[in-house]
Image (cartoon, rainbow, N blue to C red; front, side, top):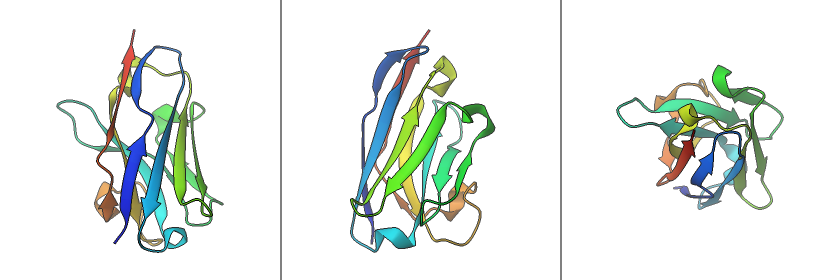
Length: 124
């Protein structure tokens, strides 16, 4: 069983940056692929970014490519999401999640463990 706790959300203006962090406990952290997904009001939860178990491969939602960077530190059991050039459309609750190594990182149904979420609000 893996427990995930996010931090770092907040209210920022368009063009600003935020760094989200997720601390994991339980399980063997380095065996999981990790992702960040988000859910805006009235919308389905969507994939944002993922990183494989070793940190050697990443995936991104097209609309965040070049602005967001996901990273992990297996020694510290943490995964981060650096978000630059934020836009109002990025406003959502952001969730950290863990999944097995196999299966698509883009598929939200593949994620077995979830954090409680952290709110990111970008004002125009």
